[in-house]
Length: 191
Image (cartoon, rainbow, N blue to C red; front, side, top):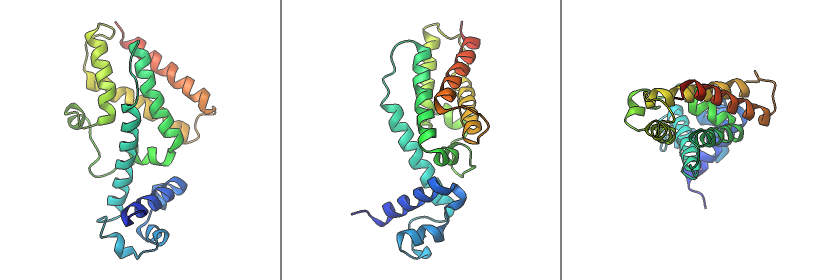
């Protein structure tokens, strides 16, 4: 049997998936769970706290998917595997992805301090691959975290344009476009 907090999280996630962050209100979540809006405040201080919990849960899901990757072989293939996990997460959870990466949230990790101190489990995976590629001479020696942030911005920007209907492509065509874009970026920083 699900706990109240699990029911709240499930109801909020369903509203988010259907209508985006603007559709997640304390009153609507409470109604969906069958409790009073005031009862929600026992679990979340406010709507922002509830949205943060949803975003954090999304990062936990994404981190678990990244942790399951087998990153071997050519460095560019490793980075494309990471990209594919992000693309799959965005395709499967477009509204959650937007909340995670585009919506301003209190407590969201910020560049550079949170990244350089390895407080971003999703960015750490790419950073480790990029650092190994630099050590091996595949990429020229540069600032690992700037490159992680730039490639993240490239990926997230392309995804947001795609999810926003700005790119007339199927998901497979879009994935191929992202792979080519990353290839162009990597060829510009390779030794």
